Length: 384
Image (cartoon, rainbow, N blue to C red; front, side, top):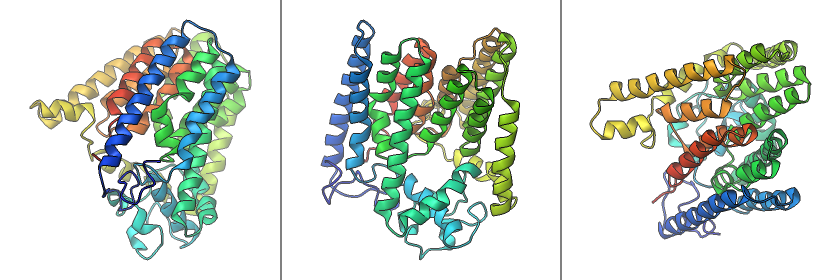
């Protein structure tokens, strides 16, 4: 409701530079903080109770779908996806070689975030191939584009919550831990970010492996990597766990999915999609003030040293996680938490990498750490 008034700065209508009456933003922060506090209390209370799974699911659906009643919230990313899709689907351009500013008269261009107007796509070919028909479906309407991505992201979060419940020893608690999280609701049903697609595919791969469908699991891992590269840090841990436990893995499914998507990507985008890491690295260097290395710099630590401290910390943490996986337990949620702590470019919706995995793995340290990250980043992107 607070996003609908004409003067509300919660909708990023001006290329990511919100304008308007900040009273709406302060009210939004108050209500979101209260919602998050209620969520934490609810999760704590559920540890000592056994509510019906259907009741937990109903509340999760209500919470995660509520932001669909708002316009796009707090980020222009969904409109940027729309523009990249239109580059290929409408203009016949290659989003891995052409920037949005090459087509300034396109109806999507004025909605693209200022930081992305001169950048080629940083997303994997699986996502870019899907973004083309979605761009055609949205046409020239920014509202249609926003709600398409918002709806897909909301569905992905709910599906991830359901899969986490299926994998967990405490399904009701896992479902609530993911599905009742208001931070996820605001940034996925509200913001439409594609990170929900990635975590859904990872959890689908884990669920497929748990039910013995290892080739389908391989397909899930391949598609997750080809949407966004983050799962690449999880695959070695999963492979070491499989080796230690004697679990067979779906190499064929993984390879066939990679070959199929890569073949389509080469046919559609040539070799341009192979250069994704270039713009990705460039944008990662645009350090966010909420990243922990930046916080260390604010204390007077030089930039290279701050990056080195957290980079070294991540390497040491990952080495320990490798040892755990070698002993038969891949702690994927902790790996994503360690990455979030070390990243120089950290935004609030990245917490979705950790929250569902922590629930699925029943990993209490990772769950606590992901809650701390949610609380720490809760205010980020709210234009105060």
